[in-house]
Image 1 (cartoon, rainbow, N blue to C red):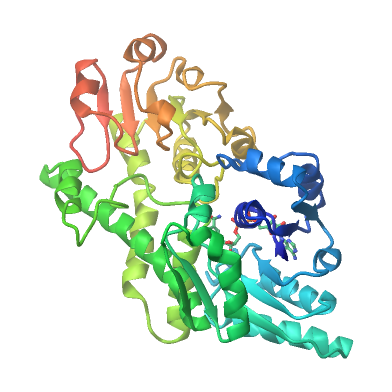
Image 2 (tube, protein in one colour; image 1 turned 180 degrees about the horizontal axis):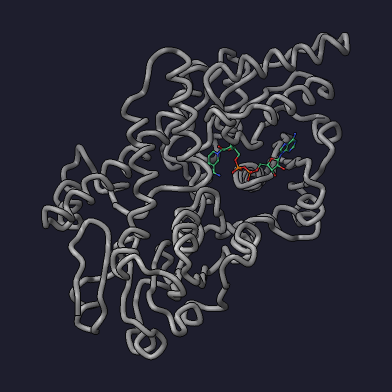
Length: 442
Ligand code: NAD
């Protein structure tokens, strides 16, 4: 069996590689020549644990190919997956330019029946637009080829993407064709051996499922951040409240950690896009509007605490930041809370020095020379007036107080992810600010 995956980013590269892992022949297509040249030379454009080895093995086994030519890649394919970006347009709606350009190209080049499945996160009714684009292109060619469209939203988490793809909680396929259903079942069978389901549904419901899932997760985070901020002023400890509510099986203990706000390439844009869809259909999604507002405010909580601690005088204060990516185990900095925090600190004249285990190149690309970059976590703290933890990478979890004591000018820690124990930090003579708890002073 042969397939093509168009768009070789986080989703396309992981999906294509994992499909190849099952014995299928896969071509990953991208318009970015540099990316494809790099991949053909063994350079993986993103950081994703386990990906490099898996790409290498499948390339060596002759099952995984990289190309900029969609035309060549579609030859003998039974299915093509669209996995290009759908960034937010100016009004918050998902920009379908890339998805529809690919659909048109598929129509221009396909030679036989195939299933055209959209993996990108796209608003409802996009499959119809894809169908129309392909049909128009075929009409222009004056060829009469059968094809089916399907919606196959992707749920992988960056940082755990390989595992999520190989052992998915569920696979969602929206289609109105039995032939497409049969083919998708065959393709995904190897990933379902752990008993998790493949759920077939109509196309609109599949498109909606992806947005509803991400919006629900974002809602949990914003809800918890709202509760955390209240905990702080009433004198409750949000960590205890979290444990207290998380033990209720109806609520569950996942995704209820308060923090510095959600970021990344999905939640912010998908929440915006669903709000926009609601408005379009005159069904204003009030909860999601609040979720977004709470999240924007949450990104200001840590800068607010820093400003208050230094009596609004941040000029020339040296602030060491640990963690720049939007979450651990990825180099993705899209909408990362660190960017907002850094922006606020720079506005006040602070000198920022950042460190991240894998996102340094990406951070340099985005921030240029506006901040200093350190080679390791301790270099970021030389003469620092404060340590700010923004992303909870494992290497930040246990503090070496002696080293911190020696390096830092002032002993104060702002913890945007609640990873330290207040009492322990205090015992070592540090002031400690976290989310949803009273600060502790030495
Ligand atoms: P990405 O930006 O990492 O990659 C997109 C790739 O598509 C880029 O390499 C780009 O060059 C390529 N591209 C653009 N136009 C093209 C064209 N005409 N032909 C070929 N390639 C083209 O994006 P991503 O993070 O992989 O996300 C892709 C989609 O999947 C988005 O809709 C996103 O919302 C969704 N999604 C992402 C994640 C995630 O964790 N990143 C998870 C689930 C779903």
